[in-house]
Amino acid sequence: RPILPFHGAHQTAVLGDPLPEATIVSFDLLVSNKAELTGLLRTLTEHVRALIGGGVPTPAGIAGTDGSGILGPSAPRHALEAILAFGPGVFTEKFGLADAKPRRLRPMDTFPNDQLDPAWCGGDLLLTLQGYERDVVTNALRDVCRATRGGMQIRWKQDGFTSSPKPAGHPRNLLGFKDGIAGPDTGNAAQVGELVWAGAGEPSWAAGGTYYVMRRIRMLVEFWDRVSTSEQERMFGRRKDSGAPLTGGGEESLPNYSNDPNGNAIPLDSHIRVANPRTPETANSQFLRRGYSYDAGVDAVGNLDMGLMFGGFNADLDRQFVAVQKRLVDEPLVDYITPVGGSYFFAPPGVRDTTDFYGSALL
Ligand code: HEM
Image (cartoon, rainbow, N blue to C red; front, side):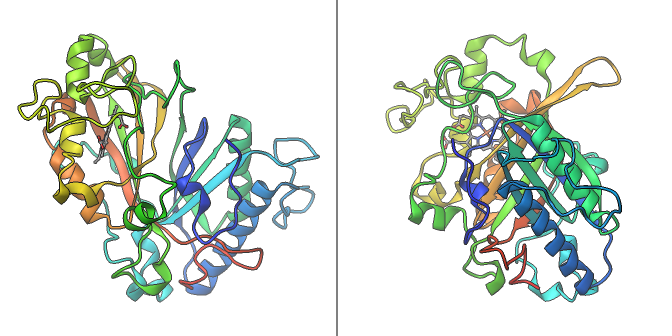
């Protein structure tokens, strides 16, 4: 798909499908007052804008560097998109922003079956960079880090990727199932307005932003790979080959729960049926899922360390992600997945034009 423009009323990449190569980076702020925070966000905006718009980003005041990074001197327009989001640490007295906090923003809840490693949790800023080529994403991260050195510091970083359609349709996750099929229709303004963009009840600056949940969920793939396909399918409620619901049809067909009240086709405790029972009461708990697979090598005892950087965009964190996550506690899939990190963030509205910057309405 074509790369989305940087400027807009919303951060444009939120509604775009995940691209093949991504980096998800959480930073701790080192700035100590509102003026420094504003300066940092202006610098960050200038660099992301230049990286997405093409051309050579300004050299960040370092004598002797030309700003060309690792992509060579001409730096033509490279396919890149970015999403910036604020953690709860932005909304403190230090910055005079304690009263401006989005009402649901807080450190991430710990859910039953989570095994959270503090090294993979938290952060004041989350930057998601995505593109078609690994070196373009890496160059963007290095450019941003160089320009903001002293103002923020990496807390954790995970590279991610999505698969190409195999053989068609949505990309597959590392459990081998097509992922990202059901969810709000991003072309439907009313649905996106209700399920993605925050507004009602929030501080006025936050209108048009979105709660961005990021969870690092490890998959116990050695165990998963020994489970029969039919049992795997019953855990999800969809076919592994086509992605179709087990009540029939194709990948895009809706699961038919009214014809399957006892769960003979799609078990009552399957992932999709619990996550979205498709009742009138649960309709407004759906949110936009945007995940990336990750491969982090091998753990200390020789097991593959891989999983899903589970991302979700919500108009209301508690009504949506938290409600769905609570329903999913103790689903059969928990034997094969373990959340090990993550955080809640709030992605501010978009950067409108060349004079604007991330968070301008807040500051
Ligand atoms: C659907 C995988 C974690 C919420 C699905 C589907 C798959 C899947 C294969 C069916 C295809 C689709 O509609 O996209 C996974 C894996 C996970 C995971 C492998 C962890 C490693 C989560 C979490 C949540 C969640 C943490 C929310 C708290 C949903 C929802 C749907 C879904 C809402 C759509 C159900 C529907 O509308 O029919 N997931 N998921 N998933 N998942 Fe997950």
